Image (cartoon, rainbow, N blue to C red; front, side, top):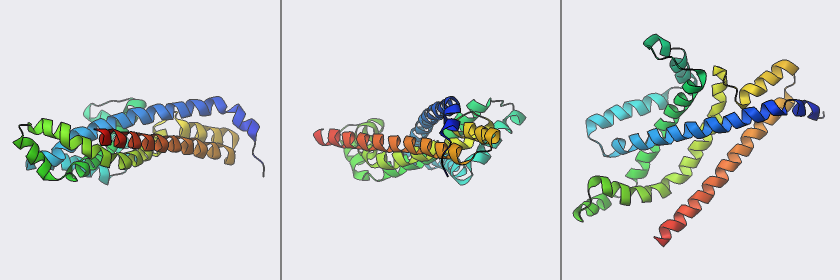
Length: 221
């Protein structure tokens, strides 16, 4: 069996458009997830029990339910409470909140891996709690968190395919439309697999480069 390259050429503009949108969704969704994770990781580790319990409820809910269900609740259930979002906004927020729960737990694990004595020693030298976390705990934790963070970013990348359910015209949505129009399956899904594989490889290589650079910078410092 040979591949129909003419079919791929015919739909190349749609596939490239979907790939570009997939990258944009991934970058924005990952930025939201990192921001949410960083904002919640600190109270999840250092806050008083009451606040920590509230953050823990958020983390457990978003980690314990499928992303697809969360997207349906946000997009289709939102209007019931006065929250009407278009598909793209709902998809980005849903992806960011979902990833943010995992990043929050990742930040908590990273902070917890640093001996508590370092924070106490910094306080004894006149550092405020905030400055000690920022200048002493965080730089060390970043090195430990970088490899699992890259893995999590890869997971978020692959989860962008779920957003096609909301009719967002990313790569998976374009491939699905291609199969419905042509009844071809091998060429479209091979292109889909290749597109995601290239993006995952790019993310992994960038992650390795960032880890090497950060480690080298910390050694020099």
